[in-house]
Image (cartoon, rainbow, N blue to C red; front, side):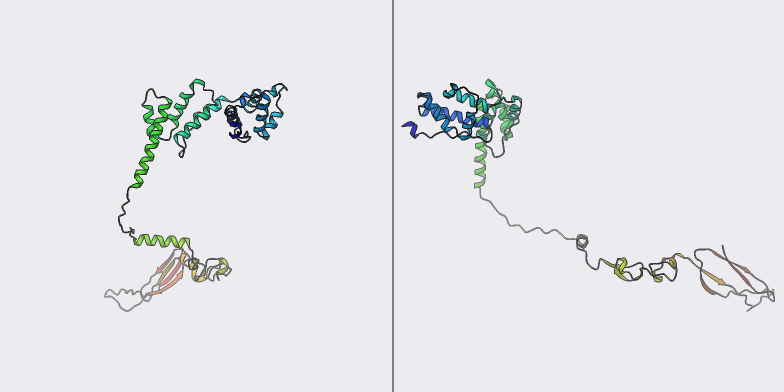
Length: 323
């Protein structure tokens, strides 16, 4: 009656960590044998029940195990052979590295963290040092810095004390959190702060928007080759390909020719003798008549040589020559 009402153990899970899966299945199977008193029955019944509940994939592995026919009639030998298959030689150094780097997650409770450490410790062969290693890992891996400091101040801290201190701190933090959320919130009215906008800030903002959103006016400027306003492209300039009438160079008009500005201008004065008056010493008076003319010197310096003569003598002559 007991065996009919007791649930059958789950099949062997063949995905994920096969070592942990097999340890879980064997533990369930042994408990099932005791609870249903199957361990008191004949080996044929025990073997047949085991092969029925282990699952299809695990049964295929059993069929290919290197076992004698006599061993296949013994339930314990079948379990040992399957355990040897699922649990290969472990790298203890690597398993201990995984254990020693295990830290408590943010959303993980203390009990969940301790359970995970115990599972990892079973694969590290710590033997009698298992409790001490789990205790050390709790102290170093806990997410609560305050409780870590308290545990380090305990000279004879054991595993149970470390677990209780972590649990107490966790419960206290949850209680404080609930107390804090029950307090009524007071809302004070405050006007919305509006930063002062200076002219400089407005100009800077406008300049930034102009750079980000180019308009048609920005693309049109006064052209230095033709003097008109148009898009700054060669095919849009009317002077492109034209010959300047001043310097005979291409691609610009005479009204914007730079050669005209580069040439310096010189003013030449013509000086004529005029006998409007005569001094008591009978010397001729010289009157200057300003006749201003403009010539293009093309950047050179020009000098004038004046030859002066008295009355009834040859007239004034000029010699204009560049230097």
